[in-house]
Image (cartoon, rainbow, N blue to C red):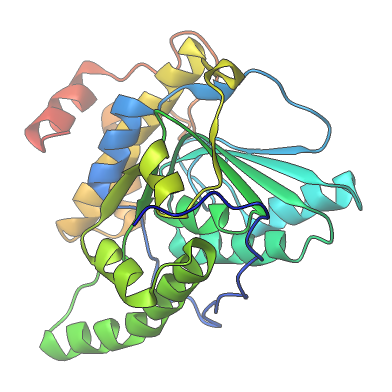
Length: 290
């Protein structure tokens, strides 16, 4: 049965647990980075105000862009906005799930109304952040993507079992937040998470994950930002691939920088030509299916 239109926004769900000791990073699935590059790279808002927080990057400190969405940055932005309603514009493939949970917790503590606008995609950790909104609007061509915590882990079967046991409470907590916001059961939300589900704008509204569709005239494609987003995503995907092959993240980044042949790791956002990859790196990416 389709959800009836809601006259009032759902109450913000409760806080989510954040691990005290972060030995494991819950990351974005590489396929989500590909989907973001194909469908949402460069999507930006037409207008911004002094009470707007933009999240057009990976969640967590990002080595490749030099940016990233973090709880520390969002807290500073909220302090600057003060005791006023805030608008959060999201177009992100996610990233560090636990940093996303921390950002969600920061937003839900804001004393005034929080309106979230999904401009292109709110995937993985970014979908958790979106749930902090008192009102959530999503573009008709945008996507909300939910899944279980995704990590890269190495070890024997006992290590894998321990990792799975450690992650289970966080998956359950996220399912409960999705359920509280949508009005669906936690079991249904857990099934969608298991299936790594993409919801279009209309489906997100239908299932209660958003309140309304965002007017198309509020969104634009920034070609310079699109080029930067796509190039950074290729580097992020390559890093995850090399880590999955057994390298540490430090080793993977050093290897990619060696192939890039550039002294700096971060791409220069908006600089013409800065997002271009060397032919050697393109060849390596292609060899891994990137």
